Length: 101
Image (cartoon, rainbow, N blue to C red; front, side):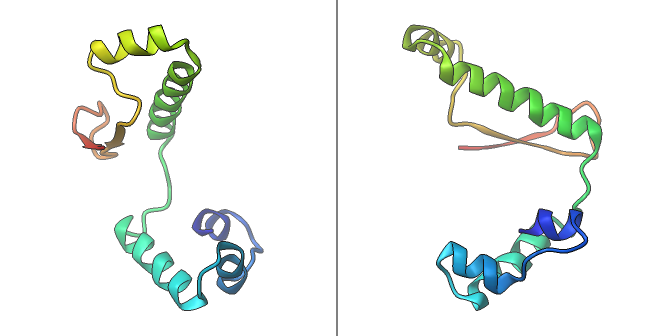
């Protein structure tokens, strides 16, 4: 919803998204504001950050499509299919990463 509002000249209002999502408009408004403050209102993504996330998601998708034996071997190498990386855009080398399980 936030992405649509940010990128599009015209978008649906919060009441529409709330109805589709099965929540109240008040809750949708709260979630939107909470999300925006969580992002620090920084909605632009650098090409480098986009490519980093794209590569990560592509690799994870390929791992999930692999036979179980390959996935098990990847897990023994320390990779996990349930890990989420959060890269710091301030660091162009992406050495500062936050990990969420």
